Image 1 (cartoon, rainbow, N blue to C red):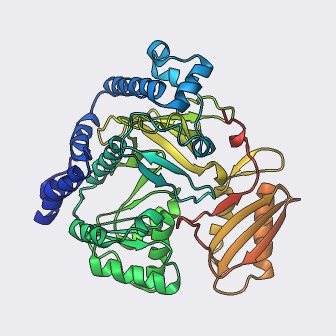
Image 2 (spheres, rainbow, N blue to C red):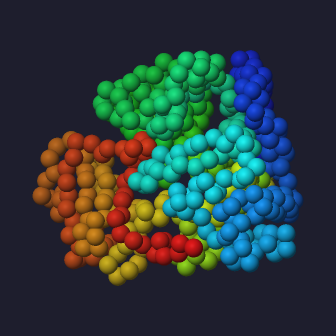
Length: 466
């Protein structure tokens, strides 16, 4: 059964922040996060049929408003002859609607705003895939996304107000450190650090601050937290004696080796979160390991390379409809991520549906010369079996040419170069040229995230664009 959050598990200051100061903060911003979180802590135990009924109710509300108030969707619905008041009978009818992607949002941003929307906030993604996106969010959706994250935080017996270190790369967070923001973070006991400080001196600073603050929770990209953990381990600096209860990771695919390293060095479990500024807070891992979907607020479809929905257990592109995004609708939004739904139930007792797997982004898949798709992990394992390689990045330039950047303490030997070439060619094909390039370090993307694999080719994931 699930372990409900207990105020007794925290101290008086955390209880003050979580029970009074943060709710006041949210109320002053016009957010309903407190009431929504309380409702979510009830609905996470509802019977699946009741959750599905709630989704249907909110989907109908979203589509009716999109048809009447959003110029873009009025045109799209009229084009296909879809009237939500007449034609929406089940959640499966959602598949009749056109897909939304970043390019369409860029071209139709003004037409995607609801005519009755007020005080929309302007947001941007980090652009880790080279295509940053600007879009708009209303207060209702913000309230729900904040509440969903807050609920998931409390699953781990920590709460807003517990000491926290956030290592992040978003220009929004890192560009707004004014006096009010600094004061708020001090009151909330949150310390925000840039994810870009990955030099030797920067890594030393991360370790020093984590030891000084002794946070209850860490929050950041898995690559960065694993990098810090590895640095502390190399320096012989113990980090598992600080009382850290959980390390929350998000925004990148979490690999088993990263999870093991973070857990071993910091002496705490890793909780994987899945979502984004654009798609919303989609799913979060509970202490029993289940990746629970925020079903009250989102509908997740998994589509094959033909654009058709796949059954649970089969992997495809994750497409999201955010049910509280009426001010600027995200309806069947292509995330670019690859994953699979699950039909299993979680041992925690929560009835929220589960994601079975998250494989990464569609751009994490390489195209082999025979036309098949290969996940980049197949090549990553070649390099991870080589202890001499400290870090790497794989760049598929063409079907016939792949570059491999490696970071090493010494020089790349002919023997190592040959092993990398043979390992890659065994998977990509013997005629593929493999260039091994030694670099001083792997640079993060503009967002602060790291991408271990980049393909510059069109893949079957890009075949459907309607």
